[in-house]
Length: 367
Ligand code: FE2
Image 1 (cartoon, rainbow, N blue to C red):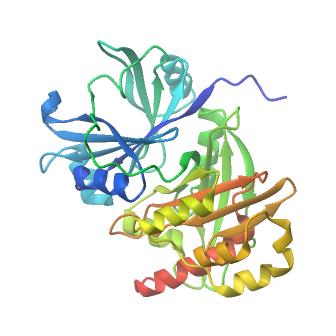
Image 2 (image 1 turned 180 degrees about the horizontal axis):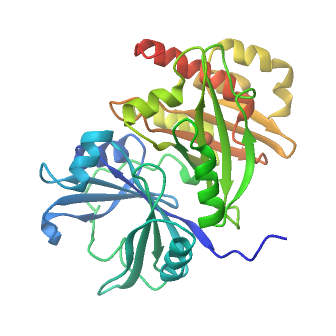
């Protein structure tokens, strides 16, 4: 029998990216990805070393942070890794307890439980180390009524020419890449320290192409709301996409973030119209799908036109597409996913996806 959930997590709270130019990244996420600016912290709010822009869409909040000088944690992180995800924040009922449970079970503490308050209420924040330099922050904010967190000022969007959201509503999963041989260490971390269980496992025979292979294990928390798959490279004939990531990110880190929509065709059309680039899918993929066209509600021609992939499991199907890397380095990217009952991660598409990734990798001279 599984023991009682010692780490009850309510949801993803926010994702913080450390980036080279947060102000311009905020513009990108607003106008390309349809997010709305909600909060800001920087020189005007009393910070001296960084500025942070917070944007929201549906239940998703992303924070974009840049250094205001050449030294310090943010500058060092961007210098080494390029733009990337620093914090995967998890909302909990009791951040002190979450921190205590995790550190007692072997997690390395990064920030001890810290209370912050302003006129809108108070929050408790604490964080622990995850893979690479990535951090999990526990956020307890039940009584907080402000725009984001104490220390941030709300952004006034009135009078601004404002595009509509593109229909992205939540975070489905956040995937980490770890080094060869490190998978089990991180599986154990999520099991023992975070109380997660392993939902699925794909080995390198399931996920391989002519050139590369990888292994993937999907970890999920007690409620099933938080899914954190972990990838490890497997030896292939040439450099795998995971190795390419590890080389250019200079270590383990978040590979992709899957965002949910309930109308993927409209969402992807919107994103493409705003300049977001996606991986393309060969026409042969849809030719192979023709005899299954009546098993999906969507028009196969529209899916083919946009390059949206389809996968099935015993509970239904899912639709998904992957963006190009969002920064200069071939590292972090997004997935758009619409679930029609299926609980999988597109494993039936892994081969088609990897071949698409490898075409891009080859163009970069990294295959
Ligand atoms: Fe994914």
